[in-house]
Length: 436
Image (cartoon, rainbow, N blue to C red; front, side):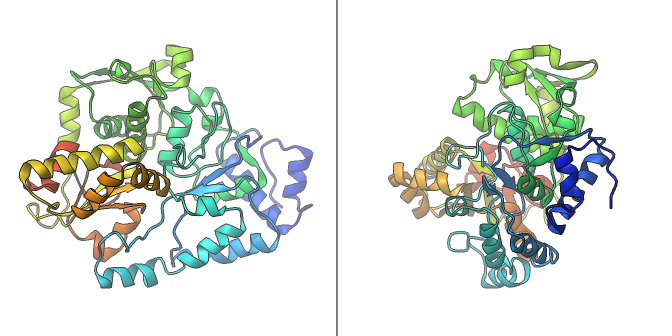
């Protein structure tokens, strides 16, 4: 039996030793080994029991996953408070794809999607959450919202960095499956962002731009500079309203996702904005912190550094994705209005390339109900509104090799999609500007 380095309670040691069965013992050993690898002193009790899983796709290649889940289910184990999941990989009812693309995804890549979702239901996925797969589980339309100080077992880098930073919850950057084990057993190793010391900032980022920089570029710049360290950002509060303003929520969502994907940031502090920074101010900085100054020139340098990895640089894009992470309600409305207004100016009835706006099913349902006219006008203009994960869509080699564009730094980082700022992306979508 594995001998833990960390301190365990009698109950926890009993789980490890098999007093509640072999399955529990094996899961406990994984968690303890995980904690020992990061020098955790003990296991902490999860206080926000609703988990969030990154593994939302029934991919054929993860062959050990399905018998393992059946073993857990057969042992009568499940997550008492339930969980939410990242977006589904496919929505061919709304997102255009060739028949061959659909067949490859449905049978060769995500062939176990139906079986996997049935297994998820048996370990605690509610019917309500099953209809609302989204990477933005913390938005009110999805409702998985921890409180400041809550201890979580989540995976999905953009959700974890948002929970830590904007909500002030405590969660490490867990991998897929470990977050499941922890949610079932109710414990997480206490290290990193679960500790006061681990939440200290080692970088002071001083913003000296002439206006609010794009969230995607600012997050990218900071992520590439600090990597997995914690930044304390000064100067952004003069451009953003206080939380819980919807504009600020959307900005920090996209900023955090870019910093987490272009680096591996799991927590940031924004002076005057995020809860710990408002309370503790520069006391959050370690004594020997490093400094990074970001001005207009630096924003432009970072933007210009992104490579174009298309075979033909001047190719006409086949598809545009907006919403990685998923859009908020206000963002979805903003982009729909923006596209429709620009189409009217150019006297066009439809967008020039396939355009996909991405949001949680809950946000889409609310938007299509409250803004029925806008929704129908968008659809009639060939704007697709879908709940999928664009990263999963482009994982299909037939789809991913096509030239595609996006305003998401996360999607740009993990695919061949080409990045454009909002205004230029919209101009390309409506035909005012060629992709160059």
